[in-house]
Length: 430
Image (cartoon, rainbow, N blue to C red; front, top):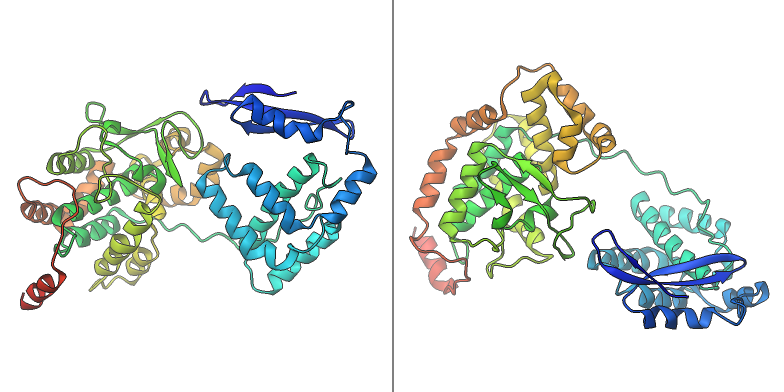
């Protein structure tokens, strides 16, 4: 019978429960008791076994094709899945599973048949990552089919996932790399809807990602109220993963405090004052002050990638050029590990660093051990001093002052209507 339960965040849901082949099964995530009992109804007879005899299940599995079952499964789980989860499932189903298996009966999806699908997809050029992702989605769908009495066994269980290629090596940006990108953003001249305040916002985003270690999904969800100037840092409490999840984060762990250094805190204070932001405003909001799933993508394509190209213009250091051009917004997060390791040397506490980054010690050691080891032999330099040296070398303070001087005295982050023809002629004349 239906039962109520609560998630870690305190949200209450209902669970449907039934018995099949002598084993108890359940499905969670129903908003009301009525929905859970309605789901149970066709699965329960007087003895809890109606329609679940081996012969009935085999007949159902032979008459139901995978494509038809995926539609049923999609409707069952749609409201429980996040938008990001739905997009990943769509990518796997429409791009990989459907061309090979949509007309295959559930009865025929045995382990050998799934293994043959894996080899066919790999031979046709799909990457190991995409094939593995599709197999995970197929496994989830078949698990639901088993619980619903459509199959007796999940054929994906026991089938090896394709071996993935080695991960891309992490080559963290140095403080000088970060400041070169920030310099390119600060020097960018206003045009169209882009203004000097946008340049200052973009430079601040690089500071927060590179010196704060924030993930892009955490960075976009950052509000003014999360900044604590008395403690010298910020709280990571919300995340934008397909949709804004307040009071949650990627790992569903408690909010974490990220300490920052005076130069970065000054960047934050300056931008908040010039932008006239209130406590509930997003620091990196769009023109309307809000954030969406496109906020990070637009920032990466329109501002970050362009700034990278401008940052390496005229740079003679080939190694630095390649490192900067290879950066993604998420890669900026790796920089703080290198910076802190150089500052603390052999006194580095990996548990504290892992807590700051928002992951486990195992992840810290597996992903960042080579970065920490590489910094052990270098002279120890405080983080604040590393930032100051890079900014002094590139003249960041002068560029920031010039950018601030271009900002109107009273500015609100609203969209501007611009006659593009007039603006184009003005730029040509300049």
